[in-house]
Length: 107
Image (cartoon, rainbow, N blue to C red):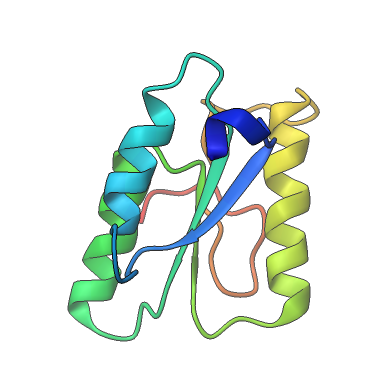
């Protein structure tokens, strides 16, 4: 479905019933015209924190820990789409954390 829709950005939770977010990221990244991926997760326990870090290392364009405000999500989307358009200098990925849409330091 993602390939046929050709979105600029995919937002996915890391924990889903049929496919986990890491699998989704890897599947999306296998596409030649891969869209950006914003991975979200609770981030409240060690497993979620590691999952967000793994998602970033495996190709997620950004990660966002729950809970987040609507503004945090919109800031993250804006930051990632700006990267896609070449408006920001980066190594091709960004860290997006709660309340910070332009954090570039490693997790």
